[in-house]
Image (tube, rainbow, N blue to C red; front, side, top):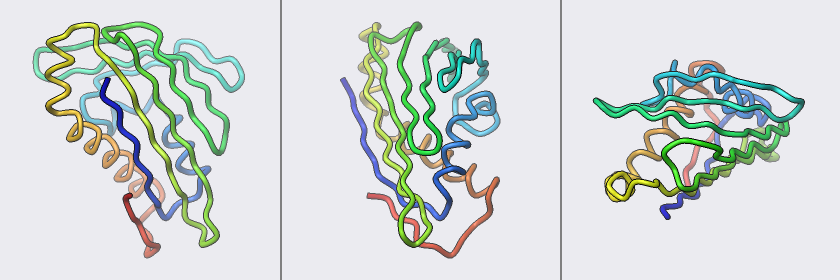
Length: 152
């Protein structure tokens, strides 16, 4: 199963980054390949979301259970769709200089071996483009800053 873990330091508050990532309904506005999204149920810190992801002629719907513990943690648990397994989490931590350390992790496996092999080829590029989309969205919403930004 492909996995990806990444830590970034961004010039925003954890609450800002948490709110951006937790706002699943707005993903189609900025997240590559996200065609549609909808929250189907909210219950306290937990909500259920459907995403439609597409590229060219391929479209797939994913159902997930999202646990959002503001301001420091979001965990996504896969429920239904074309995957055999999908899990990801975001962790947000304020650093002494006021920046935010973001830990991102994703682990998945498609049911269809063709999609799994195809994704294996492009996995790193796809994840990098998604992470970049969240960073760009943060800059659009919260403005640019002179604070240090670093991937690791």
